[in-house]
Image (cartoon, rainbow, N blue to C red; front, side, top):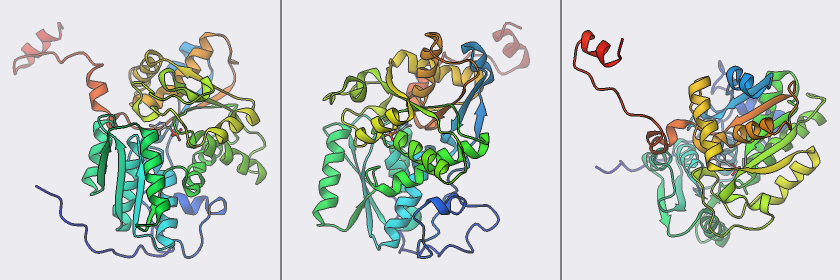
Length: 371
Ligand SMILES: Cc1ncc(COP(=O)(O)O)c(C=O)c1O
């Protein structure tokens, strides 16, 4: 059965009546965002994600103030919604009829959802066979047109940049090279400061196309300039070992890692990310797939937080540095968990033990449990 055609476009109302009882992310941080009275009040309820203290993992690692920013609780299950709501709102304000993006999965899910809410066409170009199942389905169910190429993310990004530049079709590019995306993603840093009462000592984050680390750093700097925080964190970025161009100092032609969301060999925001690293006195290092999977699993088993594997790269890096004695026990450390574990059921399925079979009675279930 095919999806019904997208109904005619209903104008997104101007800001004002929408969401009066519950604050909107864009309104909360309006002073820091490129929002005008003409910007439509598009929202799916993004932002306001929890900052959770990681008690048990912190204790194991010898870290007294370890936190997770749980970005999987955004509407489409990843941090991308923070930037997408701003990018799509600004695109609609400018009269765009369509959106286009390349994606390792989460950008396409987010663009498809916000495009559907705004009533505009969405085209996503992605590497065939390299997208987690949940993300691909999110894009398709929202009615986006999905083009799978025989190539990697870096090639997909080059293609959509060329198409958006060509002006053959009036589409707006909504990858993180769109500055409104990074503006919106700064709100993650604002929320961390507001929840802690100051910036953390260290912000640990996965690095793929390098937009998010750049946005967080810009957000912390904006907050300090505005006097909302007196300190800024050291930025600790972590790439997957098989897709670590910034760590290696050169492009990676065939990036490979189980962390598909950060399987990127030529990050678009490379120089912004190295500036964030250097200006903050931070670092960008790599973590192996085994380290990523260990952190990912421990988040579920020890803390009850199910994120997607790529999201755990920041914590994997912190765990390694703690093991090497490179962290202060009392430092306040925030790991950004960028997306929900429900995005990637196939990796989860490959990492759980089977179910226990039993007959349909309390006695048989008890016996199967060896009670
Ligand atoms: C879950 C997840 N984590 C991390 C990243 C990396 O973010 P960035 O590309 O901004 O470095 C992505 C990007 O797609 C992602 O989807």
